Image (tube, rainbow, N blue to C red; front, top):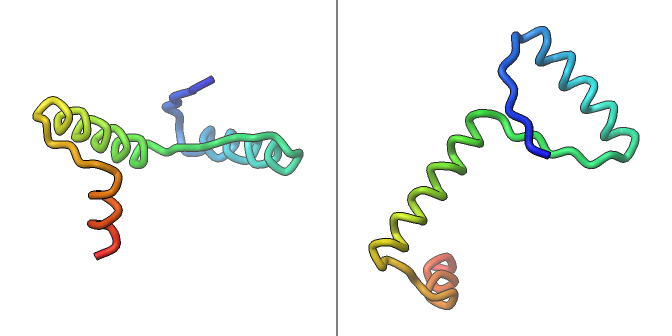
Length: 68
């Protein structure tokens, strides 16, 4: 399940405290704040644009570039 939440600071702190208590009980929870969501969305949109423009690279080319 994905949940997008818009809440006051006090409510946000209560929710985050509750979620933290669940992780201490062994539950699996991933929290993505708005800034990370926007960053990831921008990366995905840029990637889709590159694919549409044929600007793609092989895995080997990417690894070479990352190892520079």
